[in-house]
Length: 563
Image (cartoon, rainbow, N blue to C red):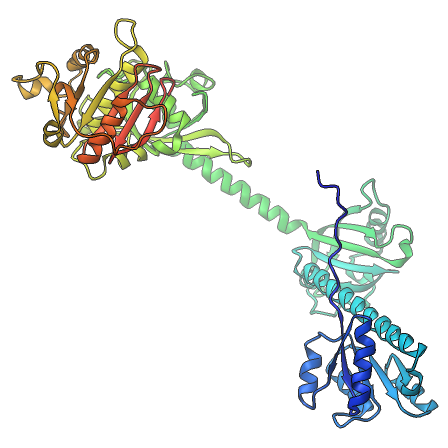
């Protein structure tokens, strides 16, 4: 914990503009001021003088009564004309009582006789300059802040004014606009002219000037515009100084007519949205992160044959999503993956089920719903029935997750093929074989090159079989694949889904393969061969069932059995 005292930011040194024709005195004055940390700069001639003063860097001007640059009176009048507020100290080399009076009348801070700036007078001279410069700097800071506050108040969307003894002392632009006055016309006006009647005036006063617990008084009332029309408003007021209410009140007004119009428009907008949802010819579904249905529109109820009571609060699974598709695809696992990573399933197509048991194909568009903390709370899904499009019942590749598109890019692998292999890998990962954990490898795509960089460990069980028998998307082949996964070696599958071989040993040098710590030789071999070919490698680890996906020699993605 840092216990040091906070360091106050250093104030910039006071900057003095010194106008004097005497170089000796100018140098002496600069030396005196420098000892006190005050910077003195010699003044330029006209018009450069005005340009330098307009920069605002000077806290004070010290000038001889008359210099080659300008006379004192001309200097003071020029400053006033240009609204430059910097103070001026006059240095006089003679006794002249009228000079002090004249200087004070023109706004000069003080007059100093040069003869008095000697010995102890040097310190008094420097101190007087410092006091004048610091007062000026403080006044400028107050003016700067006041300008910021004024800008904020003028830009406020609600009308604001300051009232004292029922007289308007100040108004922002919005108050003038609400009441139909031009800028400045409200200043000094009696507030009684802005209210419809004496009784209304009395009622508003009693409501406004009796503040509640928050310190604000509040009342609804009618204000009268310049043209005589009435504006319904909600009005708030509080004293500028609660200890001295007589010093005036800040009044804030909001048009309730405009507010009511906004509420009507919002209600109309909500009604239109609800009409669109109710009348949409698409299924609109909202599901929480646990797979519980939180909303379904009337079209969705009618399509699936359920009432809202039969669906709301129920799980997707066992209502409109079966655990497995007719092709054997693990839809329960797919739903889990969508709920965990909705961004990866912006578009997803899968088999669904109606209440009467009819299987249907739905193309879903999924969008996460995020709360104000950035947490995904629900998923909004919009679905369209595409059952009449003659979709192949092998639905393995219809989950069009973006990460899968990245993996398949620049390969010869068809989407249905990759998904079928991935589903088999998931089943091996979760189930093993005959109660035992199993590890295996799938090399998908660029089959000719993969075969060229590998050799058989066993007789190839797929050699000589017809193509239609060894297509990976054939559900009848899946049990055979799972059985053979217990053997050493990798499966080689073409991009079109033909299982070319099982039990292949990768023969390339894997010394250059780069894999994370914790991965074994099987992973290194797959990383190496995907670096040499355009194949994608899918590895199921025997210990833990982890699934790793490799491409271009790199590990792209890892899945655990729970995923």
